Image 1: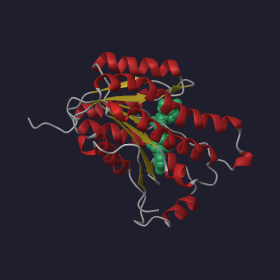
Image 2 (image 1 turned 180 degrees about the horizontal axis):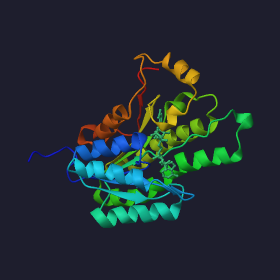
Image 3 (image 1 turned 90 degrees about the horizontal axis):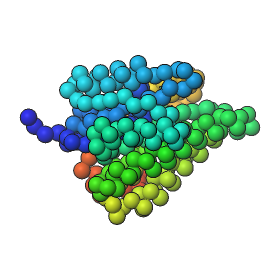
Image 4 (image 1 turned 90 degrees about the vertical axis):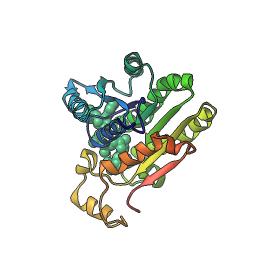
Length: 253
Ligand code: NAP
């Protein structure tokens, strides 16, 4: 049997029940990594069935995966999730901080709750997952942390003050932790996607989508698989000397 690029590796992908996270999970698995597919149970709304379908797809293509529940905003839940993966497979090599939400509004109409929800999920969630996963990476002196930021965190977007702040914060976090972890051979990079077709962008009004499309050099929206390719590259040994970077993937906006 030919060996695959990520054979023997263990990945944890947050928010992997659908959208970009699902594509990252499938891609990492196709390269040989075992994958923990994180999903969340919020207010009785379980996405376990979606996560299970991702696990089944991975197992169906010959890979190994488990679904792990955790709200990334909740320290105890994150600790338990990391513990579960490490107990199962002994380590975590690759963390993709993908879970994220939007609660768009112009600033004067933005509630404190919408601000807190977005910052807690997109920024605090990445802080918690990174903090608890790092122990395993530090022990083995190898690790890959890939943070899914956004073009909004680089350029700012009207109506997304909370989201842009969370993603800008995630980019600064990426650069800081890359400096802290460099001597331990742990790379930390951010990806800044533009407009990718998922549930998150499906809910935007048609006029807004058209306006965004007119700004894209390649004249099409991205697909989750486009971003997953970059995740796979950053997770691999081919990206050994890349850390503290923010890599745009936006069709040329
Ligand atoms: P999506 O389809 O809405 O999926 C978001 C994922 O995050 C879902 O699996 C969701 O779980 C999960 N999630 C939300 N809150 C969570 C929590 N508290 N704990 C754990 N998981 C949670 O969005 P997407 O488009 O795939 O976005 C994925 C990432 O890419 C996000 O960080 C987003 O900001 C970023 N991004 C997306 C685009 C784009 O154009 N789509 C562009 C730039 C950046 P549920 O299924 O339970 O809701």
